[in-house]
Image (cartoon, rainbow, N blue to C red; front, side):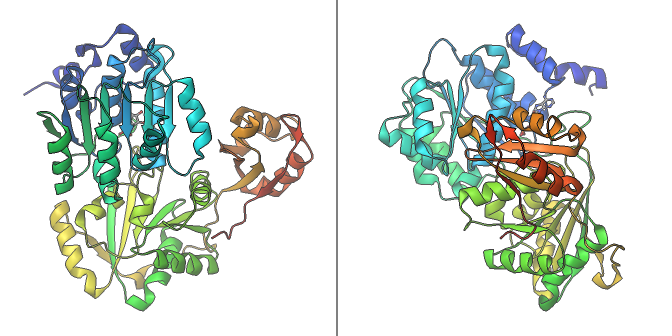
Length: 477
Ligand code: AMP
């Protein structure tokens, strides 16, 4: 058996054939040792082999393929050399952010995100300026290929990220169309949390003698962000009480941020109605929302001005939410894998998680299958034993202000922070996350100062223009 010291050395990035500048960048990023998925896949990936990797989100898989594709990249060649296919824009944005961190060592590397929901023209213009790496969703990539705005002749690395999710979302045909335009001489890396039949079909068609790698447990990227434990508690519920039972759980546990999963869009809407009527700040995320509405919901949840996000599984795909205190299964899902995926969203980054499930008598069979799949039993408690904490529903600590003007007006987060802490006279500690989208800028502020902030910022200027802004209401649907 390895001693801990030997074990540590084996996981050092210095064992990999990576340039000194990359090694230094990894050290600067605080990546001291490889995560299991990186240790298992990087040597083969760097040697140019095709891979099928089964690894969950949060395992460090982006760096696992990112280091491989960057290692082969020539920044002097202004052509697309690597393409990453992702199921959602949120995931694509995350992948871009991680690739940019990793690419700092490689000089001037242009990384472009091409996803549906955004306007085509700026994407076409960015492509015309040249890009080395493209990250995007299959449908939009296909659009660009059809119009001839995206050329893949110089591509040498193709990555499928969360391939199973892309299949679930009906992207198979689009993926095939995109892959057919990639040169046959290339490395293909396929990442997927599960390995359904469709993935096998995809791999058989587009990968060459792939090596299969499975990393079962969620990895621990850094010592500080060790995966916390997830407390799983189930409650028996009558069908007629289900939605009110969610409020009972929220009033008892008082989590600051909760993701509540429903099985249907209608259930999402109904639950938001019930929670809103009781004084919670809850928003729904489902497939019927337009991209801009979806962005707004996610920004508000990330800024913590909304404490409950009610979502279907499909809508929640690719969401990466840090610090989620609780996940509530409003209904038990018939798919044990989906359950594991749902609850894996809490208990991240070293925090303990809380996964609460409401189960009617009809759903007991599902519970049994989940227990088998996860190799652990649920703890059962009675809803009647839960007491609401005093003080009524927990109000969000933050509020979100929406400023008219965004990237189009060249607004940057620093400008907004400057306006808040300068002329308006607020402390930086009263300002939370700032998110700039194409046409709007969203600022998280401590709830108590929200109205005053609207007044003071509205009286001032931003980028030489009068600021138009409003506080986003608690009740938005
Ligand atoms: P991912 O699974 O790619 O989304 O990565 C999860 C998180 O782990 C990201 O925030 C990465 O920046 C971080 N990460 C990836 N590799 C390492 C590593 N070797 N050491 C520390 N953190 C890492």
